[in-house]
Image (cartoon, rainbow, N blue to C red):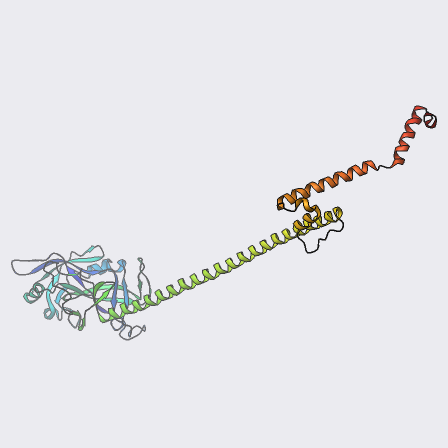
Length: 369
């Protein structure tokens, strides 16, 4: 398969004979964009109708010994001819020649070159600076990801150079050009991009605030990616919103459970307090009945029951005074009970004790009396 690449010339110079001599970057590694018609014209792989096919050129292929050697002593042409250059048509297409000192320069192939045709030299002076390699290669349709994380659809292998064309715009980018000085201004009008007998037009599209020159296929790819990014952003926003809603719902559920627990705790405390209050009232009622049998307790508060039992002595007194007087009354009542018990001890018990004392002494209790 014959394909075309693009690069730039290094520091050029004109000889005294008018020739243009330069060291040029002519090809690079990485991913380059092709249309499906370029890489799969017979649609054998199902790629022909695709606007964009990302073709990966690994270092192992670009810088292989055979690939590098194939770019030595190649014809230089002014634009790509419609046919491969050979000995049969060399005179019709060649305007110069590459040298044989082919070298790697970072991610690029660098070659020495000379342009000997005056019309081609004049075109360079007028701003036609970029280079595009014409070469043959084998395309392996095996999708994957580059070491730096870029996705590709196919791999380019068995690269063999045929010619090197001077073009207005090349596929490999503005790095592959004949020098940098007096470079033509960009962006004023679309420039013709020569790929053999095919002509494509570059257009400018703004990507993230930056102007980018690309083909219609490139624009289609960018717009597709923009659409995918929009879908992804929408999905992410929806996921974030759904997550926040779920968290809020869970927080509400937990808050309701905490509130229910607090209510149950409060009820337990209130029930215990009520039990204690009932017990206290029962004790006061029992004591009041003991102190004043005819006292009425139904429907009355504990304080009122105490006042009714204590009488006028606490009529104008405070609740605290009433409680203290009640406690004293209860204590006096308890002491009176003890005294009564002592006073009314069983007399028979005392007589039995006395008898035992007199008997032990050997005294007749009656005579003693």
